[in-house]
Image 1: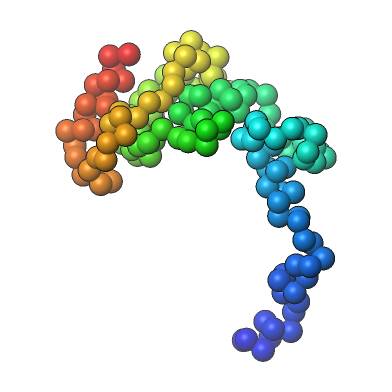
Image 2: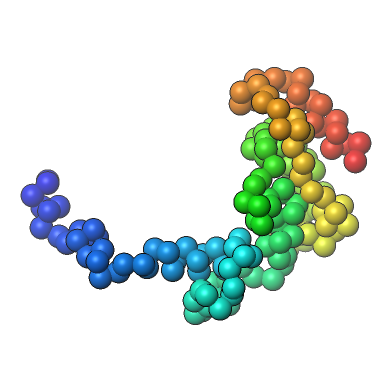
Length: 145
């Protein structure tokens, strides 16, 4: 099998032809998803951006704010996975699903003003959902809001 595989060209054989392409692609990707606000928009390729872009239901900035992602300082709120895995996120946003079935209605006031904050305030919590009491506390916090 190795002989057959080695008869075809390998991508690394032509890296000198495409030098710098990876950096350009990363600028483009981060630009399309609005994750590099420090980079001038003129510095990356906008070809077919509307075709392959993000749509217009909500801005990337609104998504980042809702889920505690700081693109300026390149940080995220901790324990976001726990928010998702425990079902807290599901319970919080299910009432705000769009009528067309295409995700969350970010125009709903309860969603538009929501920003995920680390429920443990940066402290290390128990590993991977092994603390049921903590999960119940998170659910109680959501119900109080």
